[in-house]
Amino acid sequence: MIVSQSDIDSFHQFATRAISERGLGLSLEELLEQRHAEQEREETIESVRRGVEDADAGRVRSIAEVDKAIRDALGFPNRRQVSFRP
Image 1 (cartoon, rainbow, N blue to C red):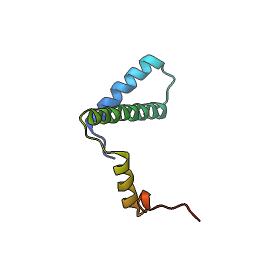
Image 2 (image 1 turned 90 degrees about the vertical axis):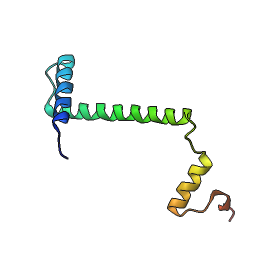
Image 3 (image 1 turned 45 degrees about the horizontal axis):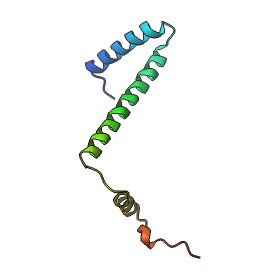
Image 4 (image 1 turned 180 degrees about the vertical axis):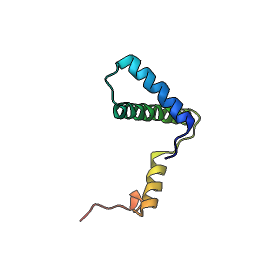
């Protein structure tokens, strides 16, 4: 992974804030882990926000459409063709 100046600046701001809030007892590895967790949290929140916006705008698919698409992609039979009889 190529690191940009922006990445370094962002980590520096995070590390400075983390050390001032949590004290000096953090290793570089712990800071990196915490930054990664924070980034994942931010990405998850943004993804949920986009999903809510899509739903509000009517950009959704029914469960039946999603089920069919997944079954088609995996080569599974359509739901109405499935039989559980011996």
